[in-house]
Image (cartoon, rainbow, N blue to C red):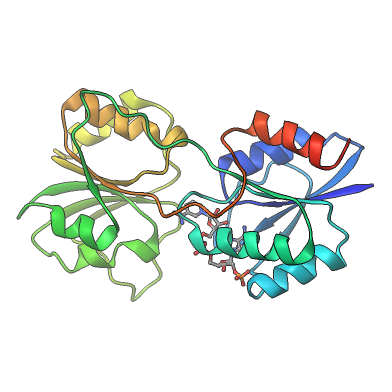
Length: 246
Ligand code: NAP
């Protein structure tokens, strides 16, 4: 039976695994970095943890008899994407990157593009009240700005002893509801938003910013890996059919 490895950790990876779960023509395994305690998986088998770099992943693909690799990791997960490209090349396994489109741009957006989180923190004016959608490992530059008040939404809570910006934390995944985001921003008198250009459903906060006329300090995406890219789960399914000759 054909075997497919999905590098996951995103809603698209979970949707893909769920769509393939009942397909008896292939066996699907989703790989997770193992950072999130309650990951959204979707279906099929799961493995957790790094491979030990591109050589480790190449060996995993060969030893496991995988016929194809879908890199459905997050647009900002740049290291695993480069490792996947190198490993698939070494193992001679077809690979595609599933990369969701960036946030849509409209005339109402007040985007301030910056290259990284450090530049995002530096771009905020003195005393700003900020909504910050960022992971635990990305918030340090904001903690170095005690003049800011930050409402931070993150999936995993910070560990004790970790630096944290002045403000409040909301734990959870982003809602797909702009009205809920508008209410949240108003409730906390937010004047600025900091977001990565992740695309996908987290676009609700971008729509909310547009509705309220708020500026968004937008962290630009890292370079995608070399090779073929698809933009949706439907395109990824067609690619699987072709690559594994199902
Ligand atoms: P990263 O910096 O690109 O990768 C760091 C290392 O983590 C990789 O070299 C790899 O270790 C391991 N790794 C990452 N994703 C993996 C996977 N799906 N399966 C097995 N090992 C994996 O990645 P990151 O930005 O920390 O993201 C980690 C995970 O969180 C990814 O699965 C990503 O899809 C998800 N995620 C990331 C973001 C974000 O903003 N970065 C947002 C939402 C979800 P080895 O080199 O040892 O193989």
